[in-house]
Structure formats: structure tokens, C-alpha cells
Amino acid sequence: MGKIVRCVSPIDGSVYLEREALSEEAAFAAAARARAAQKDWVARPVQERVGLVLKANDYIGQTVDRMANELAHQMGRPIRYGGEFRGFNERTLYMASIAEEALEPYLVEDSGAFKRMIKREAMGVVLVVAPWNYPYMTAINTIAPALMAGNTVILKHAAQTLKVGEHLADAFAAAGLPEGVFQNVVLDHDTTSALISQRAVNFVNFTGSVEGGKAMERAAASTELGGKDPGYVRADADIDAAVETLVDGAMFNSGQCCCGIERIYVHESLYDEFVAKTVDLVKTYRLGNPLDPDTTIGPMANVRFAAEVRAQIDEAVAMGAVAHIPLSNADDGGAYLTPQVLTNVTHEMRVMRDESFGPVVGIMKVKDDDEAIALMNDCQYGLTASIWTRDPAAAEAIGDRLETGTVFMNRCDYLDPALCWTGCKDTGRGAGLSILAYQALTRPKSYHLKKA
Image 1 (tube, rainbow, N blue to C red):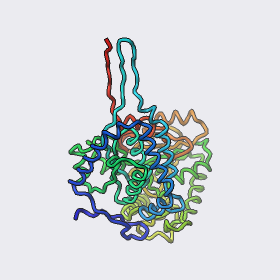
Image 2 (spheres, rainbow, N blue to C red):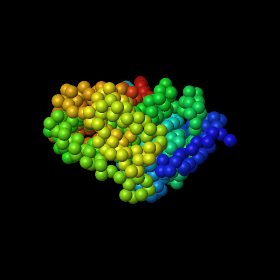
Image 3 (cartoon, rainbow, N blue to C red):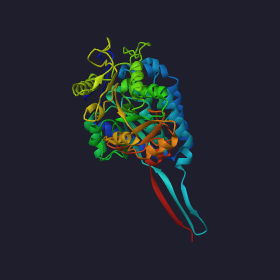
Image 4 (cartoon, one colour):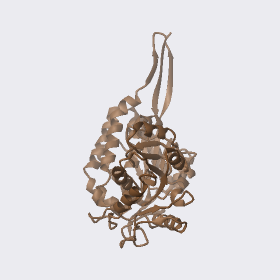
């Protein structure tokens, strides 16, 4: 028997499910099936490929109750939030709407003497290594455009969310995708590395930790490796809207969001009011079992993730930070973690420097835009940044000076499928969603045809 991969539920620490990982031989056989299937798949018209992916999308939409219940068991998100179909559907439909145009040849010249053009050619076999925190939406970001572009896909999902890969496999099978075009596999790290290093696949999309990303960076063409996303509340901001949205951006999904808000900088004129309203709002959160419809914040996905957040909070408090949220009765010292707001924080503290990926946010006072920009850029990551102001020109000017992949004004923690999802610095490289996703998942092939 091969290695057993287990999903331990954060609800009660029990083993929710376990699966046997493929042997290296079986994994390479799956890659070979994908490669063989890709030739016929790419030969199909674009709209036919798009149509089959949309059928799979419809299947997922008809099984939302399954999605929400399984996510609660696997990674602790409360069932009251209903799964991830809204974002999953939005991204799939948008990528379908632009597929034909995005994949059309770029015509340079078509004269009596020459025809010159650039075509987009599918990469071949795409390996998607997906994370557990938004397991449907992060996976479909690559799966949908990859399949629509004519690639075949092998999905390796995180151990914490093995059921997600199986649900997606059921959807694509129900849609009628040919055998080998989409495969869900369970792999250990060594076998995954072997597939990549021996070039059994043509393209790798990885979302996960910096440590994991560095291990496959040489072979992976697209990576998203983490963030420490900031929010900045200017003096002219709508303070109530800023508090409501930034708190949600920091606490939703127990803070386990790639582009969640982890640090907030507030103009000195609004600072005291902002902190008071933020603390009042976070105190209304109800920590508890995610299967309870009254729960608004569930456990973190794993005890070790919660331990890291607790360590950052404890270290910050020991260095002079002030913690504003009393310990919840539901906080068990394990996966169930009290959401926390910290003030009197500095960039000497890990909670303002390292990725927390949990329900904690630090708030600092700033005197002007220049100080806010310097602090927002004082970070090894660069995924998103959120600016709160009534002045769009100021937001754009500030955004031009920020080292980040996406600039938001008066919103946060959102992926617009029409805009490129990308990052800089240690967040990684690559391009997801938008027309650029099709460029990332295809390669250019130039044609220079002399007619006479």
C-alpha cells in the first residue's frame, strides 16, 4: 500500500477522510494519459471546449449544499456562507466569454506578398497544485482557462481539501469531458516533484506557501506564494464603510485568505474612531462549530496554523502591542482561535511583517500618504493593497507608488475575473484570470508565410 494522505477535520480533530497516494509509476501513467488525450482535445473547436467546461460549472451549481457541508468539515468555513459557487461561477463564465477572442491569431499582415501572424498554442499538460483556503475558486482560476485553451489538466489538491478535487472530477465527468482531459490525483510531495523535475507535465500552477513554492519554482511557470496585504484609510475616507469592509477582509474565512487584510494604516485624524469601531465590530463575531448556522467565524483549518497566529499575537503583546478582543469561551487553545485586533504595533513585530493567515489584524497611525506608502511597501510580499478615499485620482497616484499586484479603492479581498491576478516580490509570479491567463496558459507561435 502506498502513502496514506489524511484530512483531519478542524471541527473536532477527527480524520474526516483518507486516500492512498498514487505511486510514482501510476502518477506518470496519469501524465501519459493526459498527454495522449490533449491532441484530440485541442483539435476540438474552442466553443465546444468552452461548452463542456460550462456544463461542469452547472453541475457544481446544482450541488452547492454538498460544497458547503464538505468545506465545513474539511477546513472549517461556516455553512452559513454557502460554499464558493458565486465566485467559482463568476470566474468560469467570464473566462468563457473571452475565450474565443483571447485565443484568436494576431494578424500582422495579410497582403499579396505575405501572411504574418502569431497564433496561441496550448502548452499541453497543465498540473494545478491547489490550496485549501479557497479550494474551488483558486483551482478554477487555472482549470477553466487551461481547458478552454486546449490543455489537459491534472489537479493535485491540498490534503486538507481532498473532497474538492473529487467533486470537480465528478463535475467534469458528468459534463462529458473525454477520458484523460481532466484528472484529479492524490500525490505526495516526492511524486509531485518527480513529475515536475522529469518534465512529465508542460506547465505548473502552484498556490501555497513560500517554502513550498521555492521547492518547485524552477519548474513552475506560475506561482502565488503568500501575502501580507495592507489597507490604508486616508483622512477623507468613509470611515464606516472602511471599518465594515476591512474587518470582513481581515476576518472572513478565519483570516485564511490569500488577499486578506493583515495590516491597516489609518490617518491620525481618524485613528481613534477607526480603532473603536473596528473593535466593536470584531466583538460581535461568534466563534464556534462551522456546522452551526449561527456561527460567523469557524476554526482555523489546522491546529498548527492557529498556533502560528497565537505565537505572533503573544510575541507582539510581549513587545508592547495592545490586544483589544477578550478571549472567547469557544477558544480551545487549538484550532478555535479568538479573532484579534492589535494596536501599538510596529514593523519590528512579526505580526506586521510575516504572513499571519489568520484572524488577526494590526492597526497603525500615520500622518500622511508618504508615511503610509513607505509602510505598505515595507514588506517582502506584494499581492494586493486597499486604499480608502473619496478621491480616485489620489488612489491611482498612491497605487502607482505601491509595490503590489492589485490596487483596490474602497474595497478589498476580491478577485475581478476581468483583471489580471498577479503579484510581485516574494508573493511570486505568473498571471491568472483576465485575457492574460490565456497568454500564460498558451505559447506564441509565429507564422511568416511568403506567397510569392
